[in-house]
Image (cartoon, rainbow, N blue to C red; front, side):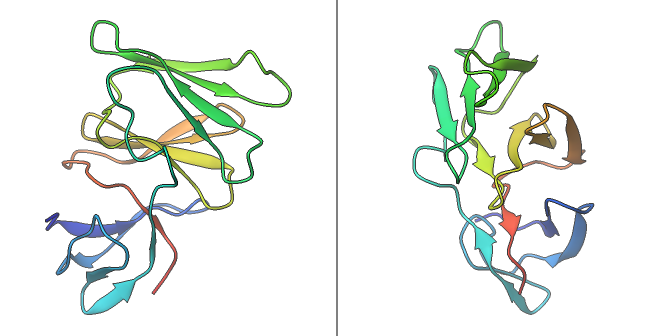
Length: 145
């Protein structure tokens, strides 16, 4: 059970606290502050990374995230696109394999967990930390109440 403050992480805005979770925030739907929120669960094959390489396609199939095998506690994160089928390197960081890869429903970005940060990576290879300094578990895209 993930009893923490419930935050939205939406593709176009900053995360905001909706309230303390009163139901498992790892499931869909989730409940916080007396309101039930529809959340987007990971697609097939994208929930966890595991100990080896992982490949996770975007919802429309145009892009793929390639997570390299762990090396010294870090993993290469690469984006494969129609423009570059060999992949564009994004960064090499200590990605949490148990939290996996979660594409946005619109396919323009994905979420990964690095330590106590939820990082949003965009298809243009830019990225930003959207949640930090809290135990980062079960990142989900909010589909609203």
